[in-house]
Length: 469
Ligand SMILES: [Zn+2]
Image (tube, rainbow, N blue to C red):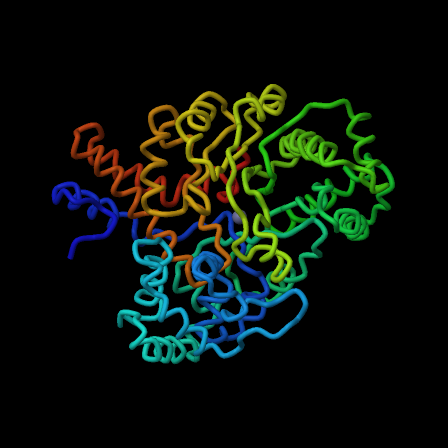
């Protein structure tokens, strides 16, 4: 059976198959994602198939919304607590009736592969087979071997990073560490809610962080003290990286007194949108300095216009599929940070994009020119087999393979983790195979690169191997 990702050319497909087979069973390194640590801390059985695979998957719910199917009918909770569909089977049937919308999409590829490889259900989903597929998955979910920790082990996850705010007390991670289970689940320092003054809850998040750090945050220096203290707490809970989700990649080197003035305006509730942008820009440079001190690898995720769909946001809140990518500048935006620290071998900054036009024009030349920079995996709308191929084709010329950071699944959906990594491994195998058949790379080097992309690079770049640099 032809593989859907490898290649149409049979010789290239055979080489891709060999490369993929060499890396297929390597453990999964998941240095960036959004699985709720409570899932593994509690180890309770998952809910019904719809609540596991449809309701929280904004790729799925947004496509259905685009054809007029209200999120209420898919069980997506409302901010006002109003009624939404609660019957899993009804939600599942609605998905099956509209399954044709997903033809050719990565959502269909991921879901079908999840049904098949995680739940061993290979009946094709159609309106007619909706109940059969639902019942088969529900039956699996009732088995003890389908609890989260059992799946973590079956998925062969070597390390899984979740994402928490400095205003989070990390209780779930403490619970995981205390009960001796042994799976490596670490946190990631994600300070957006204490950095982004545009958020209505910014000041309260700052206060909450201060309470956890034992610092009364009345001034900018105390704010920095609290951030440093929380970073140490995160490092103690296993964190090896920080993650920064900003609307733009803008950075700024400002005198501390200027940043302090912006901070004080924020605390007074007087900060304008321009002040908030400048404060975020200055804080990125500040965080780079902190990374050099404490060794956390920095990740920057710019370019999402959050909550673009205002009606959806007002009804259902954040992270339900209403975000849209925008054009993103890196060359000028990152320059202040790179002028300050781009040549410092202690800094590691992993860059992501939602704007694939920057792959070859900006990101690859930057990563190919500064020791601090690495290119993160194709992210979100670009986390698809075709975009992964375009990524390698666009960045390898100027950045090679070793200025890239390996795959991150970036998922909230725990059961999709093995499928996401498998698709990335197949995509990389397909790209490497194209180099092999064109005689641009000998097979032994392609095999070594394959293992590096799948396993060794993410482990090394995200400092998951215990290495300091
Ligand atoms: Zn993420």
